[in-house]
Length: 216
Figure 1 (cartoon, rainbow, N blue to C red):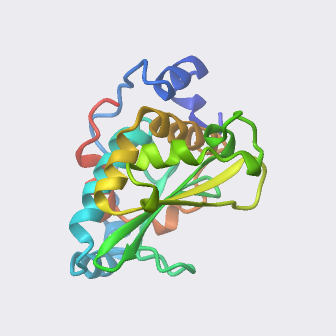
Figure 2 (figure 1 turned 90 degrees about the horizontal axis):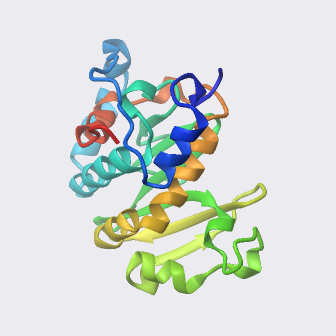
């Protein structure tokens, strides 16, 4: 099987998505010293940025709450890149298959998060209608309306959510509705097959993502 079916049947995936099951992950990770060394200089550069503590805090939460069996699927089903050279000046970016899942950008000395999700999880009628974005829901999830924005990536049922500030990002990640929507999107793309961004995986960042990832 190309996707997560090699590890998890559909029922367990769905139960995890809905917060009804914990998934037993691998105890140990497959570390690759050459790959770790490849991005060490970028990781050390990020360490010198004022946003580094917030980045690592958020990555721990995202790795623990939003990626299924993250140790077992590291690099080959999801990856995290450090200071990627692609447009946007992201600090970090998480990918699966051919899709960006999540990114953190600088916002002054703070951070701004970008989440990719299904639009139908954030409309008033649960349809992929761009005119039906539930603005009230987004404001409640982030805590403050001024800390949340959105955009429409290419593709059907695609939605991008921008949340600024560590406090609002933490609140968004902790909200059951947001967490379920993020999990649903991540499962959909991890099930498409092997990750196309394996070569840009930064083990230094992954250390932080997996630090809080007990059985999820």
